[in-house]
Length: 309
Ligand code: CP
Image (cartoon, rainbow, N blue to C red; front, side, top):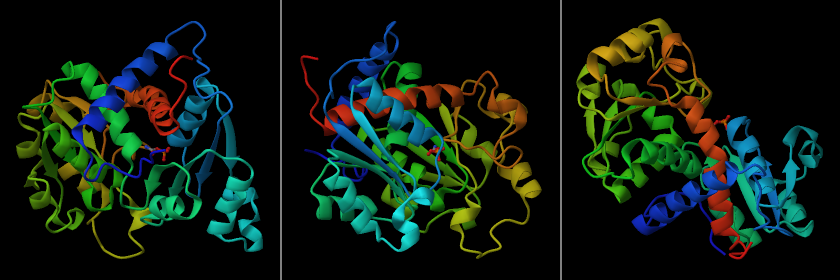
């Protein structure tokens, strides 16, 4: 059974398959009874060692929409507080009958490590600053609907805290596989040396220059919690918003036809203006909705769901 640890080195056929499956799952979710018994009898464990609203809830809904049972682990109420290790916790979850583990953890590589020790399909729901593949998949499913599934010749502008963003990294890998052109727009302190060259991405620190001609803009959250007290990385959030934050006025002036994505949670008046969060160009709510179908597609793929269900 396959794991989805990330999109690094992903074959384009995997992305096309998961996007097609996401579209099929959207159709399921649009039915009067939005459920199919494709994963009846399977158990999906949700191991979230970092906080989450969207990802955890949408994996929970996705598993239930496919008829699976969900085992939810909450670190605060668990035996981790009595000194049980992450590995013993995971082995306990396997012994309770999990068929698949969805994991979010601050340690880069945690999904690989769990796969090696448990021998179960592992789905990466975000590992540190490394990857968040299901976020990239759901974002791409929103863009597929906007662009009619045509990727070549499209430009995605990714703005903000690129070096700390697992979402950006999964997008860079996926964009390379699909042939989407990427522009990275950030202050130098938010860029990892060599990243742009590895992905043939354009780089600019000018928001105006980066936005002109972009078909979509992906805004990233400024991740102060991943900076380990180092810095200063920003003069101030007010100055950051002035230079790299996006609101309706700048969008209309520089990329009037672009749609705007943000994985959430948003920092208003830091990377995004209040007026843009639910503005006309924003697809943020569509992203959240698409998360359920995308995670259904990944669970179905990882667990080899019943094709006849
Ligand atoms: N985008 C995202 O991963 O959101 P959550 O942290 O709320 O899951």
